[in-house]
Image (cartoon, rainbow, N blue to C red; front, side, top):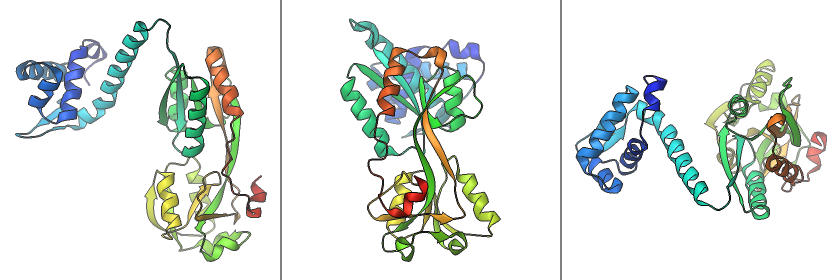
Length: 308
């Protein structure tokens, strides 16, 4: 990307041409979709690449693919077009659209989050919700940059500028298949996990705490699979391919959750927002989210009494 001034000189039609090529993988078909001639589309893309200082496409005889720069530019282009379309729709309405921008941690339980958003949508059908998924550092940055209104995140430490509403807490437990010998135990010694097959969740904010605890105890599990998707991790555990350390809020019918002696790692999850920017819409969503049942699917096994 060349300079900020060059980005400001971009035209919307160039971005539409760019996205049309991405969707069709072909300049001719993209021109048809954009209702222009191919020379016009090619000239627009050439101008865009000149302004950005980077080639966006690998031009093949039959198929056109994105360059590395094109891949990096794609989410930005989509965001700009989305915001332009949203602005046009909003101005066309009799009343302004109420929009709530939410940031979410990747490790949040999908079922509980989707249920909350679905219920909120039914209660407030006139509110448009947009979601941005990111790491804890990204969420804090987006809040400070006012790119999101509220973040689902870990409780902040020493941040005087943010307010926090607690939603739920979780503790790390061992996920095992229901048929596993550990499944009926009240707890498992950490040492007994040495050299066992494990699925490793790569996206959890407390993953390094688990890795450090295992290492300090001289426990070396055999990692068969690394994933940033909790549903995939639970599926592999349920199939008997390996064990997994997971937050106890993640559950599945074919999986048992067992405490591990020597591991007491957990987090408090809630809503973070900038109090000076709080609106009636943010306050309404906070009240709704804090009254939501986050643990409706939690197992009632006595094995988890320690984590209550």
